[in-house]
Length: 336
View 1 (cartoon, rainbow, N blue to C red):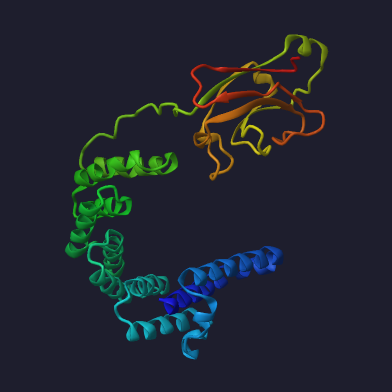
View 2 (cartoon, one colour; view 1 turned 60 degrees about the vertical axis):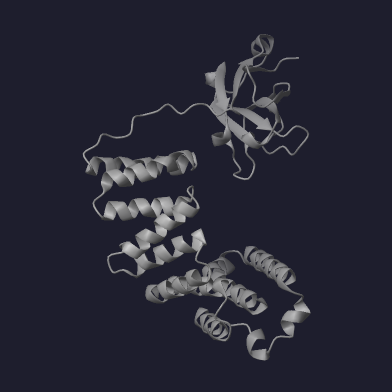
Protein backbone atom coordinates (compact mmCIF):
# COMPACT_ATOMS: atom_id res chain seq x y z
CA UNK A 1 0.00 0.00 0.00
CA UNK A 2 2.86 2.41 0.75
CA UNK A 3 4.04 2.12 -2.85
CA UNK A 4 0.58 3.03 -4.12
CA UNK A 5 0.54 6.07 -1.84
CA UNK A 6 3.96 7.13 -3.12
CA UNK A 7 2.77 6.82 -6.71
CA UNK A 8 -0.43 8.70 -5.87
CA UNK A 9 1.64 11.53 -4.41
CA UNK A 10 3.86 11.47 -7.51
CA UNK A 11 0.81 11.69 -9.80
CA UNK A 12 -0.48 14.61 -7.76
CA UNK A 13 2.88 16.37 -7.95
CA UNK A 14 3.12 15.88 -11.70
CA UNK A 15 -0.43 17.06 -12.41
CA UNK A 16 -0.27 20.02 -10.03
CA UNK A 17 3.17 20.92 -11.30
CA UNK A 18 1.80 21.38 -14.78
CA UNK A 19 -1.27 23.22 -13.54
CA UNK A 20 0.62 25.55 -11.21
CA UNK A 21 3.58 26.40 -13.46
CA UNK A 22 1.99 29.67 -14.67
CA UNK A 23 1.77 30.80 -11.03
CA UNK A 24 5.55 30.56 -10.70
CA UNK A 25 6.02 33.36 -13.19
CA UNK A 26 3.16 35.42 -11.80
CA UNK A 27 3.78 34.98 -8.09
CA UNK A 28 6.84 33.01 -6.97
CA UNK A 29 5.93 33.40 -3.30
CA UNK A 30 2.49 31.87 -3.87
CA UNK A 31 4.01 28.97 -5.80
CA UNK A 32 6.52 28.24 -3.02
CA UNK A 33 3.70 28.29 -0.47
CA UNK A 34 1.64 25.81 -2.51
CA UNK A 35 4.62 23.50 -2.94
CA UNK A 36 5.32 23.59 0.79
CA UNK A 37 1.67 22.82 1.51
CA UNK A 38 1.77 19.88 -0.89
CA UNK A 39 4.96 18.58 0.72
CA UNK A 40 3.29 18.72 4.13
CA UNK A 41 0.32 16.80 2.73
CA UNK A 42 2.65 14.19 1.25
CA UNK A 43 4.45 13.88 4.56
CA UNK A 44 1.13 13.35 6.33
CA UNK A 45 0.22 10.59 3.88
CA UNK A 46 3.48 8.80 4.50
CA UNK A 47 2.96 9.00 8.25
CA UNK A 48 -0.57 7.62 7.96
CA UNK A 49 0.46 4.67 5.79
CA UNK A 50 3.86 3.99 7.32
CA UNK A 51 6.99 5.64 8.61
CA UNK A 52 9.18 7.59 6.17
CA UNK A 53 11.95 5.10 6.95
CA UNK A 54 9.67 2.26 5.93
CA UNK A 55 8.91 3.92 2.62
CA UNK A 56 12.59 4.59 1.97
CA UNK A 57 13.26 0.93 2.63
CA UNK A 58 11.28 -0.02 -0.49
CA UNK A 59 13.26 -1.16 -3.54
CA UNK A 60 15.03 1.58 -5.44
CA UNK A 61 12.70 1.21 -8.43
CA UNK A 62 9.68 1.96 -6.23
CA UNK A 63 11.41 4.77 -4.35
CA UNK A 64 12.32 6.66 -7.52
CA UNK A 65 9.72 9.37 -7.95
CA UNK A 66 8.34 9.71 -11.50
CA UNK A 67 8.89 13.06 -13.15
CA UNK A 68 6.07 12.98 -15.69
CA UNK A 69 2.51 11.72 -15.78
CA UNK A 70 3.49 9.01 -18.26
CA UNK A 71 6.25 7.81 -15.92
CA UNK A 72 3.87 7.84 -12.95
CA UNK A 73 1.28 5.82 -14.85
CA UNK A 74 3.96 3.37 -15.99
CA UNK A 75 5.10 2.95 -12.38
CA UNK A 76 1.51 2.41 -11.30
CA UNK A 77 0.97 -0.22 -13.99
CA UNK A 78 4.14 -2.01 -12.92
CA UNK A 79 3.04 -2.04 -9.29
CA UNK A 80 -0.43 -3.32 -10.25
CA UNK A 81 1.22 -6.11 -12.22
CA UNK A 82 2.99 -7.16 -9.04
CA UNK A 83 -0.04 -6.55 -6.81
CA UNK A 84 -3.18 -6.85 -8.97
CA UNK A 85 -5.62 -7.11 -6.06
CA UNK A 86 -5.42 -3.45 -5.00
CA UNK A 87 -8.72 -1.70 -5.86
CA UNK A 88 -7.35 1.72 -4.88
CA UNK A 89 -4.52 1.27 -7.38
CA UNK A 90 -6.90 0.39 -10.23
CA UNK A 91 -9.13 3.32 -9.29
CA UNK A 92 -6.12 5.65 -9.37
CA UNK A 93 -5.09 4.25 -12.73
CA UNK A 94 -8.61 4.78 -14.09
CA UNK A 95 -8.62 8.43 -13.07
CA UNK A 96 -5.10 9.02 -14.37
CA UNK A 97 -5.88 7.48 -17.76
CA UNK A 98 -9.05 9.57 -18.02
CA UNK A 99 -6.91 12.66 -17.41
CA UNK A 100 -4.82 11.63 -20.42
CA UNK A 101 -7.89 11.03 -22.56
CA UNK A 102 -7.42 7.25 -22.62
CA UNK A 103 -11.06 6.55 -21.85
CA UNK A 104 -10.97 2.93 -23.01
CA UNK A 105 -8.08 2.22 -20.66
CA UNK A 106 -9.86 4.11 -17.88
CA UNK A 107 -12.98 1.98 -18.42
CA UNK A 108 -10.97 -1.24 -18.06
CA UNK A 109 -9.19 0.01 -14.94
CA UNK A 110 -12.44 0.95 -13.20
CA UNK A 111 -13.97 -2.38 -14.20
CA UNK A 112 -11.05 -4.14 -12.53
CA UNK A 113 -11.41 -2.00 -9.39
CA UNK A 114 -15.13 -2.77 -9.24
CA UNK A 115 -14.49 -6.50 -9.62
CA UNK A 116 -12.43 -6.30 -6.43
CA UNK A 117 -15.04 -4.23 -4.56
CA UNK A 118 -18.36 -5.15 -6.22
CA UNK A 119 -20.50 -3.54 -3.49
CA UNK A 120 -18.78 -0.13 -3.61
CA UNK A 121 -21.40 2.37 -4.82
CA UNK A 122 -18.81 5.05 -5.66
CA UNK A 123 -16.93 2.59 -7.85
CA UNK A 124 -20.16 1.59 -9.58
CA UNK A 125 -20.70 5.23 -10.53
CA UNK A 126 -17.07 5.69 -11.59
CA UNK A 127 -17.30 2.57 -13.75
CA UNK A 128 -20.57 3.74 -15.31
CA UNK A 129 -19.12 7.17 -16.06
CA UNK A 130 -15.98 5.65 -17.56
CA UNK A 131 -18.12 3.55 -19.89
CA UNK A 132 -19.96 6.64 -21.11
CA UNK A 133 -16.69 8.52 -21.68
CA UNK A 134 -15.32 5.59 -23.68
CA UNK A 135 -18.38 5.61 -25.93
CA UNK A 136 -17.95 7.75 -29.10
CA UNK A 137 -21.38 9.30 -28.48
CA UNK A 138 -20.76 9.64 -24.71
CA UNK A 139 -23.79 7.45 -24.07
CA UNK A 140 -24.47 5.33 -21.00
CA UNK A 141 -24.91 1.79 -22.34
CA UNK A 142 -27.10 -0.86 -20.72
CA UNK A 143 -24.32 -2.07 -18.45
CA UNK A 144 -23.63 1.49 -17.27
CA UNK A 145 -27.34 2.00 -16.65
CA UNK A 146 -27.44 -1.18 -14.57
CA UNK A 147 -24.44 0.03 -12.54
CA UNK A 148 -26.16 3.33 -11.77
CA UNK A 149 -29.31 1.57 -10.62
CA UNK A 150 -27.29 -0.78 -8.42
CA UNK A 151 -25.46 2.20 -6.91
CA UNK A 152 -28.77 3.84 -6.04
CA UNK A 153 -30.04 0.62 -4.50
CA UNK A 154 -26.97 0.64 -2.27
CA UNK A 155 -27.07 4.41 -1.61
CA UNK A 156 -30.45 5.96 -2.52
CA UNK A 157 -29.13 9.50 -1.89
CA UNK A 158 -26.05 9.13 -4.12
CA UNK A 159 -26.07 12.41 -6.02
CA UNK A 160 -23.73 11.51 -8.89
CA UNK A 161 -25.60 8.26 -9.52
CA UNK A 162 -28.89 10.17 -9.58
CA UNK A 163 -27.54 12.80 -11.97
CA UNK A 164 -26.04 10.26 -14.38
CA UNK A 165 -29.18 8.10 -14.28
CA UNK A 166 -31.20 11.11 -15.40
CA UNK A 167 -28.74 11.73 -18.24
CA UNK A 168 -28.98 8.08 -19.30
CA UNK A 169 -32.77 8.26 -19.30
CA UNK A 170 -32.79 11.45 -21.32
CA UNK A 171 -30.38 9.90 -23.83
CA UNK A 172 -32.94 7.13 -24.31
CA UNK A 173 -35.73 9.62 -24.99
CA UNK A 174 -37.22 9.18 -21.52
CA UNK A 175 -37.34 12.91 -20.74
CA UNK A 176 -40.21 12.71 -18.26
CA UNK A 177 -38.44 9.95 -16.32
CA UNK A 178 -35.20 11.98 -16.33
CA UNK A 179 -36.96 15.01 -14.88
CA UNK A 180 -38.57 12.86 -12.19
CA UNK A 181 -35.19 11.30 -11.35
CA UNK A 182 -33.55 14.70 -10.97
CA UNK A 183 -36.25 16.43 -8.94
CA UNK A 184 -35.21 14.97 -5.53
CA UNK A 185 -31.73 16.48 -6.05
CA UNK A 186 -33.20 19.98 -5.69
CA UNK A 187 -33.55 19.43 -1.94
CA UNK A 188 -30.02 18.02 -1.62
CA UNK A 189 -27.85 20.64 -3.35
CA UNK A 190 -26.98 24.27 -2.63
CA UNK A 191 -29.04 27.14 -4.02
CA UNK A 192 -26.71 27.90 -6.94
CA UNK A 193 -26.59 24.28 -8.08
CA UNK A 194 -30.35 23.95 -7.60
CA UNK A 195 -30.95 26.89 -9.95
CA UNK A 196 -28.90 25.25 -12.72
CA UNK A 197 -30.47 21.86 -12.06
CA UNK A 198 -33.94 23.34 -12.23
CA UNK A 199 -33.16 24.58 -15.76
CA UNK A 200 -32.18 21.05 -16.81
CA UNK A 201 -35.33 19.62 -15.26
CA UNK A 202 -37.52 22.17 -17.02
CA UNK A 203 -35.77 21.44 -20.32
CA UNK A 204 -36.44 17.71 -19.87
CA UNK A 205 -40.05 18.41 -18.95
CA UNK A 206 -40.42 20.57 -22.07
CA UNK A 207 -39.11 17.67 -24.18
CA UNK A 208 -41.77 15.46 -22.61
CA UNK A 209 -44.50 18.02 -23.31
CA UNK A 210 -44.84 18.89 -19.62
CA UNK A 211 -45.02 22.39 -18.11
CA UNK A 212 -42.08 23.76 -16.11
CA UNK A 213 -41.89 23.04 -12.42
CA UNK A 214 -44.15 25.43 -10.48
CA UNK A 215 -42.38 28.42 -9.06
CA UNK A 216 -41.93 28.18 -5.34
CA UNK A 217 -41.05 30.95 -2.99
CA UNK A 218 -37.77 30.26 -1.30
CA UNK A 219 -38.49 30.35 2.41
CA UNK A 220 -36.16 32.25 4.66
CA UNK A 221 -33.72 29.91 6.28
CA UNK A 222 -34.39 29.07 9.89
CA UNK A 223 -31.17 30.83 10.85
CA UNK A 224 -31.97 34.02 8.90
CA UNK A 225 -31.94 37.25 10.88
CA UNK A 226 -34.19 40.21 10.14
CA UNK A 227 -32.41 43.44 11.03
CA UNK A 228 -33.89 46.96 11.10
CA UNK A 229 -31.39 49.79 10.80
CA UNK A 230 -32.06 53.48 11.44
CA UNK A 231 -30.19 56.69 12.29
CA UNK A 232 -30.43 58.19 15.76
CA UNK A 233 -32.56 61.34 15.19
CA UNK A 234 -30.35 63.57 17.36
CA UNK A 235 -27.21 62.31 15.62
CA UNK A 236 -28.76 62.89 12.20
CA UNK A 237 -29.64 66.49 13.12
CA UNK A 238 -26.13 67.29 14.33
CA UNK A 239 -23.92 65.56 11.75
CA UNK A 240 -23.69 66.10 8.03
CA UNK A 241 -23.09 62.77 6.33
CA UNK A 242 -21.67 62.22 2.87
CA UNK A 243 -24.34 61.27 0.39
CA UNK A 244 -22.13 58.58 -1.20
CA UNK A 245 -21.43 56.84 2.12
CA UNK A 246 -22.26 53.15 2.48
CA UNK A 247 -24.13 51.32 5.21
CA UNK A 248 -22.92 47.85 6.19
CA UNK A 249 -25.10 45.50 8.21
CA UNK A 250 -22.80 42.90 9.74
CA UNK A 251 -23.11 39.66 11.69
CA UNK A 252 -19.91 38.37 13.29
CA UNK A 253 -18.70 35.88 15.86
CA UNK A 254 -19.08 37.36 19.36
CA UNK A 255 -15.65 38.07 20.76
CA UNK A 256 -14.07 36.65 17.60
CA UNK A 257 -12.28 38.15 14.60
CA UNK A 258 -13.75 41.22 12.87
CA UNK A 259 -14.37 39.28 9.64
CA UNK A 260 -18.17 39.08 9.06
CA UNK A 261 -19.97 35.77 8.83
CA UNK A 262 -22.73 37.63 6.96
CA UNK A 263 -22.79 41.16 5.58
CA UNK A 264 -24.94 43.35 3.33
CA UNK A 265 -24.00 46.70 1.81
CA UNK A 266 -26.54 49.45 1.18
CA UNK A 267 -26.57 53.13 0.27
CA UNK A 268 -26.96 55.72 3.03
CA UNK A 269 -30.03 57.06 1.24
CA UNK A 270 -31.84 53.75 1.92
CA UNK A 271 -32.00 54.42 5.67
CA UNK A 272 -34.09 53.44 7.50
CA UNK A 273 -33.95 49.94 6.04
CA UNK A 274 -34.76 46.34 6.84
CA UNK A 275 -32.49 43.50 5.71
CA UNK A 276 -32.43 39.73 6.07
CA UNK A 277 -29.04 38.21 6.76
CA UNK A 278 -28.56 34.53 5.93
CA UNK A 279 -25.97 32.13 4.51
CA UNK A 280 -26.23 33.78 1.09
CA UNK A 281 -24.61 36.88 2.64
CA UNK A 282 -21.55 35.01 3.89
CA UNK A 283 -18.26 36.25 2.37
CA UNK A 284 -16.53 32.99 3.34
CA UNK A 285 -17.83 29.54 2.30
CA UNK A 286 -16.13 27.97 5.32
CA UNK A 287 -17.91 30.19 7.85
CA UNK A 288 -21.69 30.24 7.60
CA UNK A 289 -24.28 31.99 9.72
CA UNK A 290 -26.17 28.72 10.00
CA UNK A 291 -23.21 27.16 11.83
CA UNK A 292 -23.48 29.61 14.74
CA UNK A 293 -25.77 29.62 17.74
CA UNK A 294 -25.03 33.23 18.65
CA UNK A 295 -23.87 36.26 16.67
CA UNK A 296 -23.09 39.91 17.25
CA UNK A 297 -24.87 42.40 14.99
CA UNK A 298 -23.65 45.88 14.13
CA UNK A 299 -24.50 48.51 11.52
CA UNK A 300 -21.80 50.85 10.24
CA UNK A 301 -21.69 53.97 8.07
CA UNK A 302 -18.52 53.90 5.99
CA UNK A 303 -17.27 56.81 3.89
CA UNK A 304 -14.62 54.56 2.30
CA UNK A 305 -17.05 51.84 1.22
CA UNK A 306 -14.89 49.24 3.01
CA UNK A 307 -16.62 46.64 5.17
CA UNK A 308 -13.66 46.57 7.56
CA UNK A 309 -13.81 49.40 10.07
CA UNK A 310 -11.88 52.55 9.11
CA UNK A 311 -11.13 55.76 11.00
CA UNK A 312 -14.14 58.05 10.90
CA UNK A 313 -16.73 55.27 10.52
CA UNK A 314 -19.85 55.48 12.67
CA UNK A 315 -21.34 52.35 14.21
CA UNK A 316 -24.38 51.27 16.11
CA UNK A 317 -23.96 49.68 19.48
CA UNK A 318 -23.32 45.95 18.92
CA UNK A 319 -26.19 43.64 19.81
CA UNK A 320 -25.64 39.98 20.67
CA UNK A 321 -28.47 37.66 19.65
CA UNK A 322 -29.19 33.95 19.61
CA UNK A 323 -29.73 32.26 16.24
CA UNK A 324 -32.44 31.86 15.12
CA UNK A 325 -34.13 35.03 16.42
CA UNK A 326 -37.92 35.07 16.74
CA UNK A 327 -38.28 38.81 16.04
CA UNK A 328 -36.45 41.57 14.12
CA UNK A 329 -33.34 43.07 15.70
CA UNK A 330 -33.19 46.87 15.77
CA UNK A 331 -29.90 48.75 15.35
CA UNK A 332 -29.52 52.52 15.67
CA UNK A 333 -26.46 54.22 14.22
CA UNK A 334 -25.08 57.19 16.14
CA UNK A 335 -27.07 56.55 19.27
CA UNK A 336 -25.70 56.72 22.82
